[in-house]
Length: 377
Image (cartoon, rainbow, N blue to C red; front, top):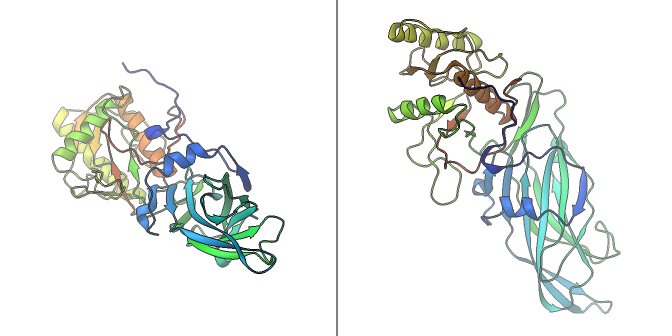
């Protein structure tokens, strides 16, 4: 008998980020920076994505020319800007982070400040941003600005912020100081926010172009290994949902991957579940447990020893599709179903949206954290 556990699931080594201040500059942002900016991508594209809540873009080098009181050049610096985030897709406040690497080209570059200028028009509110000092020969402290979507009662909202950088001499105004100058451009991927669509009573934002990959059900986890092994067997037999990571460091599903898509229609989910129960009864003689939970986060998980794949909460479920059933430990099945519901809610997977499953112990690393209490999923 597998014992019930209370646990907080943080997948793939990611630590859950709990809230963020509106704006601050800090010197201890190296951990987040080192984590999400391991792979430096300059092209402003989806290649910058790390997971549903994270990305990192390194700008093309740009220069700032220092002009003295005689209107002559007295120095020059070259700057590379890093724009990134490492957010849990939870809540509507969306922090963006920045660090700046500076190289002295000529003269003296002491006494310069830089800040990002973020614009999303009426679509979002950007917290006030103070500048951060440039560090010649090194990295600046981390600067954080928070974007909040102006949803005006809407349940689904998308926006595309733009970023450019502005440099000024210390003591002068970024807005109208004589030395203030726009010097380079940054990038942030499209952001999507929803209220109550992934799960009733919840809200959150994601980068929707990043694939949603469930990694919390693993074959080496004794609490859900029977579910994971069934998923592996079913995928090997041709059932969809397998995520194959690319070899170039990107997170886009590689050739051979096949998606599942979320199903929110309650009646259709029940039809999927009934079809799988009918197969289980025919195959094993009976089912043990309530066996009505479909994996949707708005339902309460129940025990059942009839496991189905693909899940009832997908358009690829048992009703009208090829599927697999297997008798497994009922508690294992309940926990795996609860983790599925948690994943769909915490990664803001919406109706009809693609997602993938990776059950291998050494599988996907680029995933956002799920937070699940298995006794109260």
